[in-house]
Image (cartoon, rainbow, N blue to C red):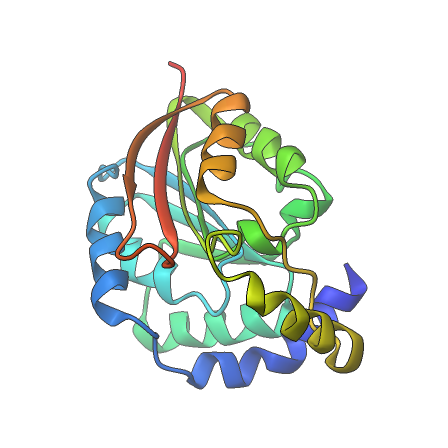
Amino acid sequence: MAQKDRFWNKTADKYAAQPIADQASYEIKLDMTRDFFTPQSEVLEIGCGTGSTALLHAPFVKHIHATDLSARMIEIAQCKQAEQGVENVSFEVADIDAGPINAKRYDAVLAMSLIHLVEHRQALLKRVHDQLKPGGVFISSTTCLGDGVAFFKPILWFGKLFRGWPDVSFFKAEVLIEEIEQAGFTIVQQWRPGPKKALFLVARKAG
């Protein structure tokens, strides 16, 4: 975790200042996610970054527990929370790649722009499955770099070697879907704004 932690702590302020690359698609994903919320929903977000998504979802649920491995990301998220006066979100420094966040089960688990950054995807998916209540949903948005962007590999290799970038996994969308299904989920919704864009998935745990 140490190398990843250092990278994201170092880049957190720059990350927080960047505008969302595709605002229209982001808002569509927010709306599609909220279709699976109720005012009683207890939600876990893993890899929450600077907390923007959790804070935007807060009015639609009972509580969101948002986590990230970067202490600086969480610090920025807590500052945003204080500025906005949001009371039903809790932020915590935690790494789902290292083990379960806690013993609680949730109605929904969110992982936005995270899965391609996780070293052991199958272990992650099992932990997510375990953290969900029966009938709960796993909602994710993932860059599938195996779908026609293999040219990016040498750039990432250079970045990792000389700039301390984290590992990034290359896999196709169909592989990710299969892995999620093998982890015990049923895909109930999928959307992609373009062939090389991030894949948005909603997967349900059996009830």
